Amino acid sequence: MGSYVPTTAAEREQMLAQVGVKSLNDLYAAVPQEMFLHNGLNLPEGLSELEVREKVTDLAEKNKVFKTVLRGAGSYRHFIPAVVKSVTSREELVTCYTPYQAEISQGVLQGTFEFQTMICELTGMDVANASHYDGATAAAETIPMCKERKRNVAYVSETTNPQVIEVMKTYCFASNTELHVVPAKDGKTDAEALKAALGENAACFYVQQPNFFGQIEDTVALGEITHAAGAKFVMGVNPIACALLPTPREVGADVAVGDGQPLGLDTAFGGPYLGFMATTSAMTRKLPGRIVGETKDVDGKTGYVLTLSAREQHIRREKASSNICSNQALCAFTAGVYMSAMGEDGMKQCARLCTSKAHYLASELEKIGCKLKYTGEFFHEFVTETACPNCRKKILDALAEKNILGGAEVDGGILWCVTELVSKEKLDEVVAIVKEVQG
Figure 1 (cartoon, one colour):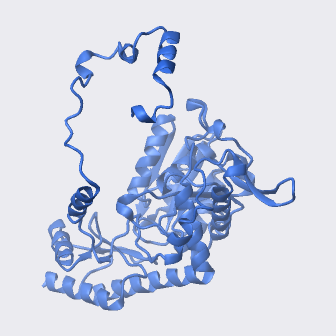
Figure 2 (figure 1 turned 90 degrees about the vertical axis):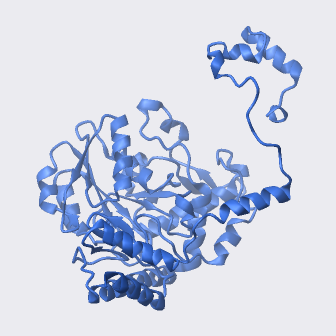
């Protein structure tokens, strides 16, 4: 790293003398000697560019890349128009990472502003922030956002993605906040259990729509129960499903969050993704992270700036209202370009294809004896029952042999997911394979 340190040897000696030490090693006097690498790292000799490329290619070929994917559970494979990557690669738009100096960051600021605007249109909310790390952190950040002095207990539906619940638990553990999981009934949130659980100290209730099992929750009823208890109603939504379902605002949500991965981001082995968050004007000041606003410069030209809150208010350790100090700017920009390219009609068409194809697969699987675990309405995910874990493994292994990634194993069955990328012919092939495995 020596060549990357912008100081001369003389300058470093001067700094060491100023702090009262003779060498850089003196700065680590408190570190036990056995922790030091006296002979350097045991690394192989460097390779040429060609040799490195061949070696990395050999490693990449060990990955199993399925041509057909029928697994979601929080990460979804959708068609991404070529224009998305083309636009997000343009230098005038991909400007400096941190937008504090607005005069040299107009590209990233405009991209983020457009993303916020489209998230508001998608959710029906008044204001959105500049994005979170992913959907799980966005969901967890709603808890401190909704907490008040006498309302400090959070609730989450059992039908939420288990990974999201785990992140919520981590946040609540660190802030000494109680988190209660409201039980499910027949694959959906138990409304009566929610009504019985919410007390005077309830801060918020979080429900996922569609939920982890693909079921469509009765969010209107859940929102009314939550508001009757004086708590905030928070919805975690799939952005593609938002094109068809009533918006969070229409069903009474105070905050809407979700993962923007379906909006032009590949599954990419789990990331990077982005979390979006939108809320009503009444809660704007409590919105964590950054908000980009549109303004005019001294010459009357349109410009973009960070507005309403400074980043520093969120980095005061235990006194902070949020732990989000950055944002997924490039991923958010990608999502914005995707939504622009698809437009309202394209988003709706994508959602309809996902829904119709998922229902087709479900009905065909039912014909060969694969019973649906839950009978409620679903979007593009559903669960079929299996007799035992070994049955699930046989089905998924048989599909994998045909270069098809089957659904995710869940308690009592398989969670299938169908997007617009899977053809009817491929779905028929899947049904035939499952039928053969079941005998």
